[in-house]
Length: 389
Ligand code: GLA
Image 1: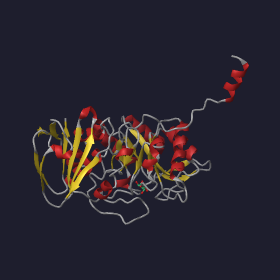
Image 2: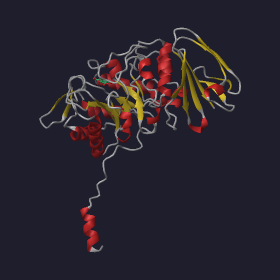
Image 3: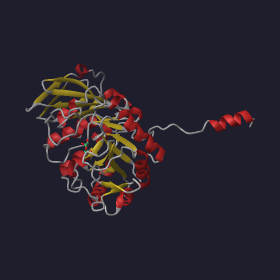
Image 4: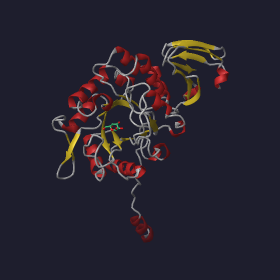
């Protein structure tokens, strides 16, 4: 090699710039997270192991659920070298052993931290320890990291999450980065290159229509207020980068079965990450049937990766449309009213042209073609989910 070229080669080190791990989460992540049901006090390694077992025995793994994620409160301190320490009383065998157990079930393992000085529950968080923590997660076998936004003072969200992205990349193990800053800094505008999903609102609550007073987060509350905050965000979602309207409340007791079905359906229309938030060990047959309906999940997981858009809303009848791969279309009618609604419509009024077969997904049957008028009735807070094919 001529000397000049050799010197130039030597001077330009071949260090790839940090980036997020590519090709993770090409469809919205699916799994379970401990927070909605177990919060801080009830989470421990026995619950996590039994949840992994239940994810397999309930058929959820085979339906596509993959990540078992421990949320806040697994950590208690840092050791003298600054390493994060798991609560020895609740996780006596340590995180590595738990990750191994989850992996042995053919599942993936996730954990939680926070970008600030302390987590939302006041536990040690990652500010100033990003690289050290990322190395630790990689060594433990973590596959998914949820990073929260409490106690961040004047930190800049994009900078903070980019720091963790770079730290994870440097640690070398592909880890999904779930950004949880509640939509305050409009992550849909900047997070595509930083994380794989980002929360769009404040925390979901286990209720239908409760709305938070402004708590400094980007609104939120029950199912309907969170749903309403997703309108207009559809252009920001796609393979590898998803809007996250928060984890599921299906099976947690605050919703009627109809409302649970609607919540799940609407989240699938939104191409939302599907993180079950209930106790998988004791769920009812109804809850299980909702969470594992493969035709509904297929709409969420469609490889085109389009989030639905709101086609119309008139008198508490809301219509969502989600383009699917192969030219199919999902249409969801949502009855927000306290009474029954009757549909009697022509498809062209909804911008649907041509002659498509109609599959009514929850009823599991074909229901005519789009060349004819469509008639149906449905009750309070119910959805009708159709796949035009
Ligand atoms: C925040 C997050 C929640 C949960 C809790 C844990 O409120 O938004 O999803 O992680 O913290 O303390």
